[in-house]
Length: 566
Length: 54
Image 1: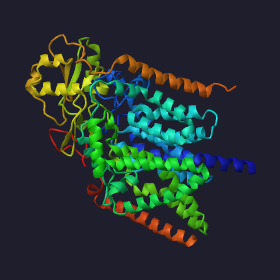
Image 2: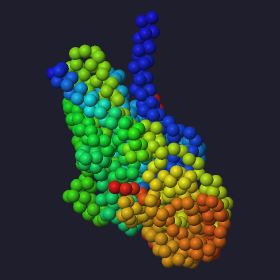
Image 3: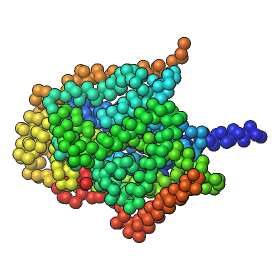
């Protein structure tokens, strides 16, 4: 009987953190889990994403979503896009808190729960989810696991390195995620393991590194983006306190209303003080070096995040973004605050554990632990239920599939240009949520869209020279010959979204599909494959070699892990 | 030390409750002002969809 009871208690203890992590994820995602596509800002999933040159980084645009687009293209050959989207979001929102709960060095299940909820219910998740930055959510979810296996590698445990490498894989789908994961892995594993970890990091990040480095011409960004994408204060306390609380995202439209509550900054500062007090316990249990390194990394993340909001920092960033290729990664600096999330959650949980020991009555201890576990949710209730009902799955109108099939079946050459020339759409069938034009991820041909974005009335210039050329042609009357010269064989007019389309321009083209939401036109002539001016796209061969190297590295790592040791 | 921890915990719990209750009340009494439960922000420019707002 005692054995059974012991077994039951042990099972309950082991299942509590996974169950809480699942509950946290479901509380956020439950209304999104039915069939359909959650389309919000940068998050575009389609039934079957095509594998195109831009997916692997050999198009004319910067490899911002490489290799994420290639991975989605391959994955949607097996799993429908909407199912894949839910699997990714649910996986990320469960894995993050689960990892944090398992990482915190304690024997108390309740403290694990506090760390899990503290990591899994944050403004960072709320704001990046509504903004559609699912690769950042994946990277965020990987961090506790990266630290766990990094610490194991630091201690010299067998097979810790392959586990560390595999923990990084979901994070490297985009450049920023790859850098966040790499920094965390290097810090957790320590300088003795740095050569091995660094070598693997280069291989894993090669699919986006290669096209970014080999891309001819400039990889410079519009310096106006620094101010537009700088962290902002969500309430009276300003940007620094907002960032310390894992908020401060630049776009006010996606910030949960609860972040503007008067007392939130006071609670955030209390949380930070407690987290700093908890670092002593963390150092005592992990050792001073790893705990201090993780704290320093978190502090660096905060510094990078607020840099754009400080006058001097803004000047430095403007200079970097305008003059150093690739420095555009530093804009939207708030993403780096992900590095602060773990020290904050773990430190807070351990401080609560230490503080609760001083309380004399069991009732007081239970009350404090319960309040600590519930605090993140009480401070941010409008993350629940699809960010308070802001997100919901929708179905694409039938026009989209009809146009995709038409383009797939037609042998005539030429890429697609979408009008109106705007990067973002606001369709009634998507409840007018702003969303990136789905065409490049839906249509089976390279699709050129305007890559400029508007923030508070300020237009941020894009980086794709082909989009700029197409814009010039459209503004000049969309001459068929000029469109053909830049390899455009088709024009897709998207209806019911803001932006002006000149009907007279379209009348000069041959209509191929007319629908309520989309009309497809053929540019007269035989069309041509886009070759572009010399040096517009990176050379394909080294990019493929880099992508292949990453795949081989992952495969060998898996073998390293599963093959029996001698 | 126990008393000090108790006082700090009580104050923080009070602040937490005040925040939660305050937000809950404002959301219930004026949902359109506090949090947009029904619709996300809609582009107000007929010629453009804004990527964001600072």
